[in-house]
Amino acid sequence: MADLPLNPRQDRLDGQLSALAFAFSSSLAYVSYAAVEKGELVVRTTRDHLVPFLTLLRDDPRYRFEQLMDLCGVDYPQRPERFDVVYNLLSVTYNRRVRVIVTTDEQAPVPSVHQLWPCATWWERECYDLFGVLFSGQADLRRILTDNGFEGHPLRKDFPLSGFEQVRYDIERKQVVKEPVSLTQDFRDFDFVSPWEGMLTLPGDEKAHEVRQGMKRSS
Image (tube, rainbow, N blue to C red; front, side, top):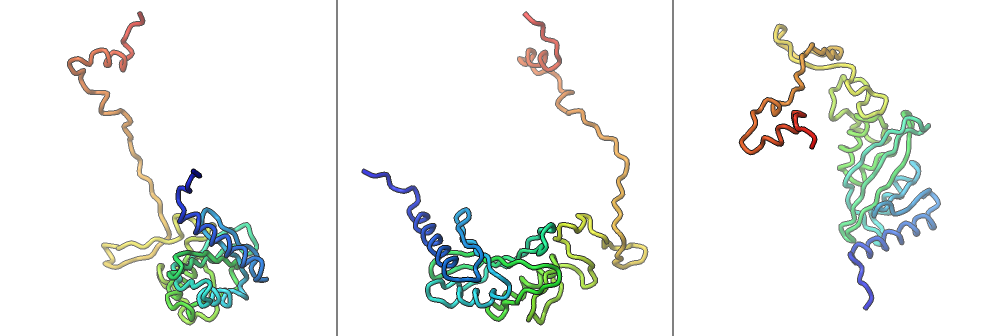
């Protein structure tokens, strides 16, 4: 009797995703890459063809990726187009996912997809706020996590971890103040002695105590 696969459902899903990857790469000229990576379908396309491609994925009965689950950015400062903009889609009909990726830089805008998925407005605002990615056709491109007067984009790799400014409440002025970051480190006298080293030897534990203290004689 032949051995049965450990997870036939996963094997079937991997086969479906591999078929989709082949179909995209062989029939769509604007798809530069399509493959299954660690059990997930990843597709790369261009900014100019992003909206038509996502519309195809959403509306075509062969695909039915109805939901935009997430939109996020990734920063690769060494590249001319340093940002990846990643769209994670879910097909409720077929219970499978796809990740669509386009690249851009600080100036070139990515077409907004809020007309396909209204929830994209929140994700695009977050990507703009944290990475500085611009989205054309997005009328509500405001910061969403940082202050309106915040300078810079915190998730860029060249942004310092401590930031440039800090916000605190000034008791004397009775108001919230914004000031340059100050990382004051007070002098501290650290005690690295383990509290267990001061324990008395318990009855029946004399040999272990001798070993700990280096007092055991070699035979």
